[in-house]
Structure formats: C-alpha cells, structure tokens
Figure 1 (cartoon, rainbow, N blue to C red):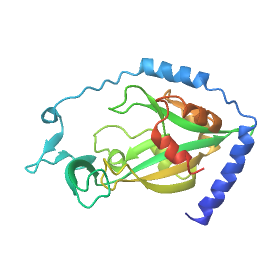
Figure 2: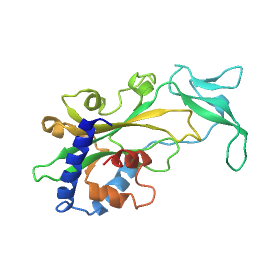
Figure 3: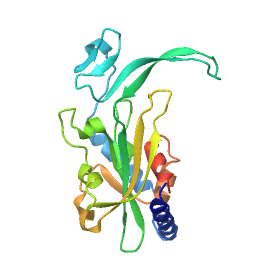
Figure 4: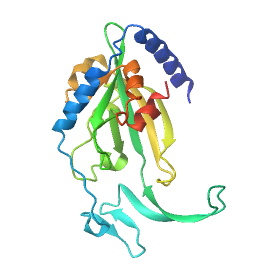
Length: 232
C-alpha cells in the first residue's frame, strides 16, 4: 500500500475516533428503514433448470457462459495434492474475465461526525435486502453488457471531481467458488458539493458505530461491507 493511502487512513481513523464520541449509535431506525425497504422491494427469485435460462448457453464441453461472453461462466476444475479432507477432487467453478469494483462513500458533516453510505440491495440468492457497499459492479456491468442502465453512483466512482479516493486494495473472491476473481475495494470521500445529490431511497447514511452494531444483527450486513471497512 502506498504511503499516501497509509497517511489517508491514519487521518480517517483519527476522525472516526472523534466522531464515535459524539455520534448517534442507535440502530433501531436503520432496521425499521430496512424493513420498510424490504416491504417495497418487488424482486422475486426462483430456481429453474439450466436449460431454461434465457441469454445463457452451454457449449459442447458443458461449460456455461452468457451470450455476451461477459459476466461469469461455469467451468470444471481438477484439484490434486490438497492437504484437506481429501487429497483430490473435481468440481465446477465460477470464472470471470473481468473483476469487480466494490466501494463505500463517506461524508464529513458540519459537526465533524462521519457517515458511510450503504445500499439496501438484494441479490438472486438472498431472501431479503442486505446493507451493501455504496457501489458494487463488475466490469461487465460497467460495460452495460446486460443491456440495461448504469450501476447507481458510477459517476461518483469514476469521476475524481465528485469523490476523493482515500484508499484502495485488491482482494480475491472466495476461492472455493470463484477462479481467481479480483475485486478492487475502494474508500472514497464524497465532495461536499455533491453531498445532496444522492437521493435514491435505497441508500442510507450510517456511522461507523452503527455499522459495527448492525454487523451483530443476523442477515443485515453484506460481507463486502466488512471487507472494505476492515481497511480502516
């Protein structure tokens, strides 16, 4: 990690310590807000057969991929010489040409307290919304390979005028399921000029103390929030 990021993090830790002494640590209103967002969320997921998937294909070798040749694929992997429960096995594994970006924006209020922006988001395998990083997208998402809209806050992540990069690290997704998939983890401070421009109802500002408390509530915090916040 560069000296610049180390200096930035040291400064951020000092600000968090000051903020923790005066910030509101109550989380009841956050959980109430999340329940309300859940009640309004209309996303439904159900399991179907691989052969019934739209826009996904299986090649002659049985590998699965998206019609765009982006997003993830499913291939086989053979393992030898493992010092595990067994020494060798075969399994399917998720592959992805590009990695992803996971980012959390934070702001400093007039009273010097800090707040972090979390996003109530639901993935296909989730039963409810979870509090996720401000921004989560693969390069395929940012390429609009899905044919839809840009991921919320893309401009903040890519536009240095809107947010200052405090720190970044590279992590790999869980290797039992993903084949060497890298994710850039970013912490960014939002420019005060753009503070009021984030009005999506699925975003919420919470402080560091609240995030730590929410982490103790079952099924509320997305694991990637922990990965990013652990930089602090």
